[in-house]
Structure formats: C-alpha cells, structure tokens
Length: 437
Image 1 (cartoon, rainbow, N blue to C red):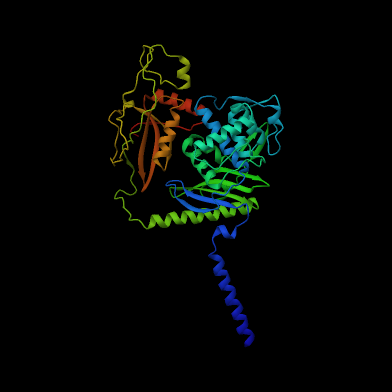
Image 2: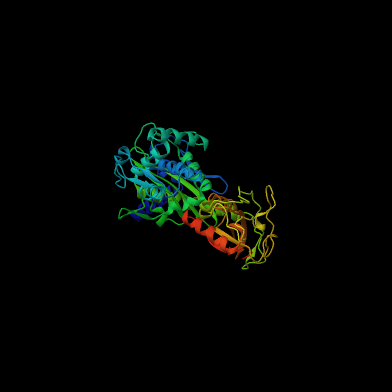
C-alpha cells in the first residue's frame, strides 16, 4: 500500500512538472547565446512576439535579401531588366559554396541571378550582382548599408553581398523583419520568386533550401541562412485566413529545429490574431454567397503618355504606349483613363457597379487578386513601369470573402492583349477581361 502511495506521489509531481513546462515561453525553451526572434502582423505592424529582437547577430545568407532588394530597385529604375547579362569576374567565380559553378568570363542573366540567390543561395551569383551594381563587392556593401539606413534598419551593417563570414557584418531580427516587409511592399511583383521550389541552370536542377514553403501551412517566402557564427537563420512570411505575419528566427542549432520553432511561433501568432478578431463585433453580410462588385478605388494616376504625333514603334512593343485604333497613326487616350483624383478614398458598396467612363468596348488587363487593397494597388502601379495604363483596384466579395483585383483599365480588346503580352515578357502574370466583367 505504501509503495502505491509513493508511486502515486511521483506521478503527481511528474504531471505538475510537465504542466509547468508547457507554459514556459517558446523563446526560453529555445534559448541559446545566438538566439533572436520576432514575429509581426504584416497587416498592422504589431509585434506579436519578440525575444532578443534588438540583439546584434550575424545575418548569414539573409544578407541576400538586401542584395535582391537592390537588384529589384535597379530593375525598376530601368538600369537593367530581367534579360540583362552581367559579367562574371574572377572574384565572383572564386566564391565558395554554396554556388552554381560560375566561371570567369561568363555572363549571368538577371533572371537567373534572382533564382540562384533565392533557391540556391549562390554566393557567386551574389558577387556578380554586387559588381554589376557597385563595381566592386566592397563598394556594394557600402551601398547596401546606406540603403539599410534609408529603410530604417539602424542596427545593420553590410560588408558583402552574400553573407559569407565577416565580423563587421551584423544585423538584428527586427531589422531583418523590416527588410522582409519592405521587400513585399516595395516589390510585390517579384515576391513570387521567394516561393520558387527549384530552378535549372546549365543542365542542373537546384532545389530550394527553404523547406518551410513546402511543409508549413501558409508559408510563401522568404530566405534561409547559415554560417557557423550565426547558426541557422530564417526570415519567413505566412498567410492564413486573410492575415499575414512575418517571422524571423536567428541562431538555430539545426535547420529542422529552426523550422519547427518557426512553425510554433506562426501557430501561436495566428491564434493571437484569431482571438483578437473573434472578440470584435461581427457584421453579417445579407448577401452571403453572392458576388458583389464594388466601384474601383480611386488611386493616384501614374505617368501616362497621352498623345504622340510621331510615335516610336519600339515604344509600342515595349508597351510604353497603347496602340490606337484610329487610322491616322496617332495615339489616343481611352476615355476610361480619366479617373477623379480622390485623397484617402472611402470604399462604398455598389452592386454591379461600373466606372462611368467604361462602356461595352472597354477592356482591362487584370494583374492579380489580393486580400489587401494596398498590395493590389502596388501590383497595378508596378505594371505601369512597363506599360501605359490607368490603375484601378476593384473590390469584390465572394461568399463573404473580400478580394481586391489589380487592373489596368481603359483599353480596346486588341490593346489589352498587347499590354498583357508585354507584361508577360516581364514575368508578370495577367488576364484580359472586360472592364465591367
């Protein structure tokens, strides 16, 4: 009998210990001298979790996110395009693993460099980009640091483009979260590259190091990194139930442990958001299950070529000017280009609403559908860097879910197809639709 009581006491105390451990914060159970983490709500900027978020850490290959930011910016400023060939120097060819085996004297396209940086985390490709944009990798490191300051990354210093060991190359989890956010907001048209599972170069297929994209619910980017001094790092973004969070974890002991920890942080953070949303009053839509198209959100007009008496034919092929349907060889501005300028627009529901300027022959090029209006607007604006068109964001409700469709409007059907073809050449998916469809 006494033995049974003693056994019962041991089981009871063991149960108490397990219960106590279950309430230990995730960051404490994962604590080590290199550990740092942060999770933010990408919709609001609210910090959902942080531990050592301002502590100085080695970025490792998370550095390549800034290299990509600089590359995307150069493309947008038309200093280069996806097909631009960048020379490979002896310095770039000498970069250690991981790499894609570049040789001095070769060239690497911008398109392949993007995939190599994201999928393979190629150090040689990083050096090629650095020299193409900064002449030398050292100078490019200075440019990266300057850009970091402009983005508000006050605790970050870069010395190279790859993240290879350098005692002066430091950052924080908070700064890496900020960079992740800016990559998505400033260059939404390129974000899809961060979920690329593999790419093929010189007959060889390279698979992504970022297994979270395949294995973790909602994860659709960004980047992993590792050097001995940093441990296993990751900056990732995930979306569930129309909400997006950004998580950065630095200092993992193994890639598997890091990924498991991030998954726990994501689950916890989305549960926080769900609990907060559930506590708010719910406005039930009487038209549940029906599609309700709302008026386009008025947005600032991009720079548009309105008329040109003697146009450059090459400009048509580049999509800089929509071709006219008249026979004089001139160019006309479709009527639906004219959208009233409104600051801080308020969205009002209008069933089957159509812009006043739209008519039966008015067509649009749809760039994509998004859960946030600002991302839809940014994507449509991004398209105007390659083609002329009027930006419109159309809000649509389908079965109680709201989506925002990014469009360029005001085309005739043939014009719309030409614009979509030009966007496709730039790597942007698009669809030709009727403006009122």
